[in-house]
Image 1 (tube, one colour):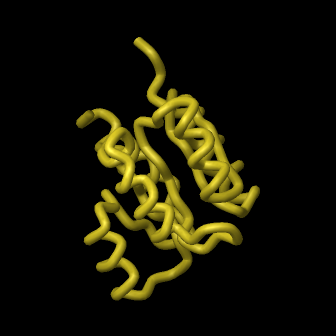
Image 2 (image 1 turned 90 degrees about the vertical axis):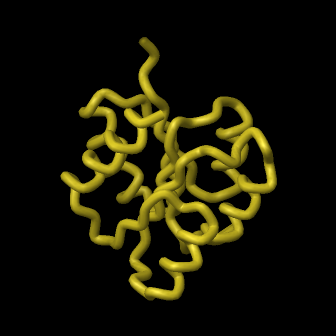
Length: 124
């Protein structure tokens, strides 16, 4: 059986390394992108089973990224989990209305990442 692919889109290399380490140790294949447009390029090569997405990035913010992938019929059903330092309730509600599967506030809890990943990836 192929390993499930998790795509991390975050402009922080520290966050990417942390998530890559945790997810790869738990048996997932991991790819990363330092921005939304790089993430789109990776999705075009191989559709991931799950995306971890930061909201605040230099090129395109996470909410605009959500609009982009939901405008593409092949990408609409990719589960997306937001990982953000933004704890504003309105942003959370807006992102959930846009189809985000889950919203995790930074600093991340490693056990929560593993739990959310398993729940989402094993459902599909």
